[in-house]
Amino acid sequence: MVDHRRRFLDLALRANALRFGEFTLKSGRVSPYFFNAGCFDSGARLAGLAACYADAIEQAALDFDMLFGPAYKGIPLATALGCELARRGRDLPLAFNRKEAKTHGEGGTLIGAPLAGRRVLIVDDVITAGTAIREALSTIRDAGGTPAGIVIALDRQEAVDPAASRRSATQTVAIEQGLPVVAIATLDDLLAYTGDDAALAGHHAQLLAYGEAFGGGHAD
Image (cartoon, rainbow, N blue to C red; front, top):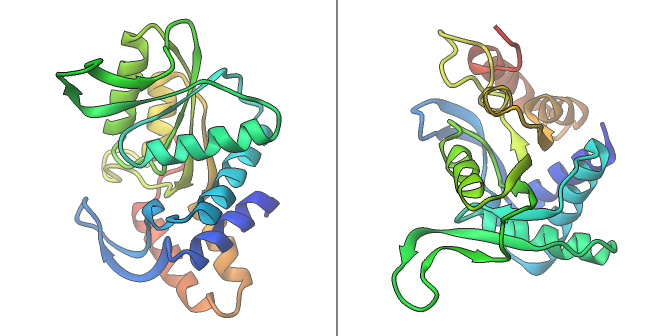
């Protein structure tokens, strides 16, 4: 496994951002694991996560010159990544959106650097149905920016409707929008990780069964 993927999963476990058990998701599915990026709730944890994002981006060789964090979780993630990239010698502009338009002061739904004329990388935690990502893409285009790609922490590799298509939600967004989508780690990585760790081996079979039942990752 690529080092940044293992570091990310180690960090997620230590932060309790990755948990094993029985979790009912918004979709109604009962999952044997749960990921919550909100548990990266300290400066050190966010810094470690940002380094994993930066390594994944570097490996993917994405071409961008601005960061965008969709409200709400994308805001601290994009900010932390911006700080990490600056530490590595690349200082980029950053923007994010509000869920509701501000009607006083500067007003509007956007905060930060102007998007116009920029190649914008969206930074978020996961893609489930893809609704939030599509809204972010629309916001960027409406402001004159050009979406350059999407980077997420964990790709669950789940199909939105396995009966209709085994294509994952992440693949669907990538194909529909014509954009690269990069994940620090995937369900496949999590399967390898639990298979290699004796303390986590008991979760491996449940993860494998869940992936077989709901997993995407294959085009129609």
